[in-house]
Amino acid sequence: QVQLVESGGGLVQAGGSLRLSCAASGRFLSSYGMGWFRRAPGKEREFVAAMNRGDIDYADSVKGRFTISRDSAKNTVYLQMNSLKPEDTAVYYCAASGGLIRYMLRDPRLGSWGQGTQVTVSP
Image (cartoon, rainbow, N blue to C red; front, side, top):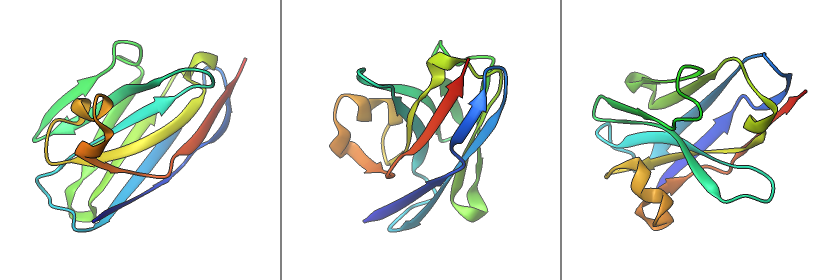
C-alpha cells in the first residue's frame, strides 16, 4: 500500500502563489507516476497536473500558471501555483499510480490518493 501525505495548502489572495508538496511512502516505486487533482465546492473532481516517466501533463485551465516537479530521491512531488485565481479554490489531492495519472479520474482505484489539502483564493 502506498501512503501519500500532502502539505502546503492555505489561504492566499488572488494573484498570489502557493506550493503544494506530496510525500510518498510505503510500497511506492520510483517508476510510479505522480500528480494532482482538485475538487471545487459543488463540482466534480478534475485533473490538474501529472508527471509520468518524464512526461508532464497539465489541464488547460492551469497551463502557464502551475508547475509540477518531482524530487525522486525524496519520493516527493510538488505543485507550484502562481497567479492564483478565486476559481482555483478547491481541495487538492495528490495521486500516484503505476499507470497514467489521468486515468484515475475515470477509475479512482487505479492508484493511491492523499487525504487532500485545502487551497482558498480570495478575490
